[in-house]
Length: 303
Image (cartoon, rainbow, N blue to C red; front, top):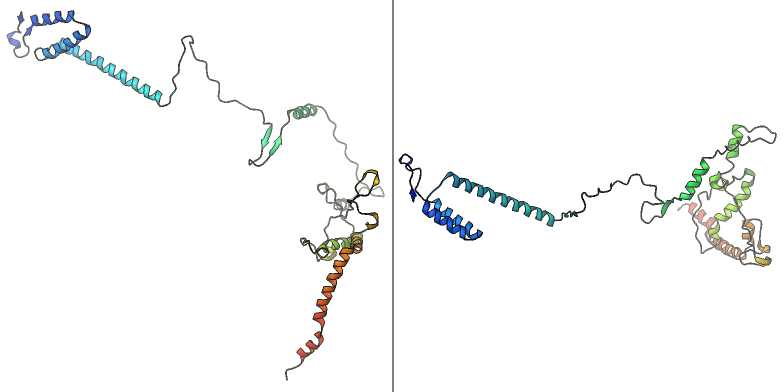
């Protein structure tokens, strides 16, 4: 059976053979789903050259849309798989958990002070060590009402009168202060005696030929070169059991009142001093021989 289009639509339509279309449909129903799809595609390809209708075009458009959606879904899935392979972690949720627990806050807030504070470099030891027990004790005692220390009484003179500003300044200058263990300043009457002791210390280079000492700052300036605050101490003997003798202690017979007396009584120092004195006298004597005769000869004229 064949149908033909009217004569006024000539050139716009073509003859469609319905018998062939029916036979093709019957054969496609007897085959499987895969063979039917292949036969439909082949039929559509074979019929495209014979007939083109709006319904057929709409079916092609719908098929193209489905293919586009499938391709877009595959592309999106490939991108997600690539992102996970680059290092992103997959979040796996169990079936029983309806929602994930929130992450804890990263800011810990105000932390207590450290027990040990290190120095600036890694070679320095701990600069300070905090003891919580000591801090608690200080905090507990600080709350208590502690009476203020009493005001010291004013300093008085021998006559019972308070000291003047000038006298207080002189009294303050008598020592170097508590930072220097109240080192005293010697009085002017004791300076000549102390000068001999200090000068003997400064001349220790001449007492031992095998030692060298740095030159003192006030050396060669006399009494004015003495430091403002200084004192001469005495080495105390060490206690020994049952009062026996010790090599660390100087025998009583060798103990003297001053440093100069000890040096004068020292036999080895005396021998070395005498040797140096003889050497100096020999040099001075060689220089002084015929010195006056040479001077007079220089004064005479050449003619």
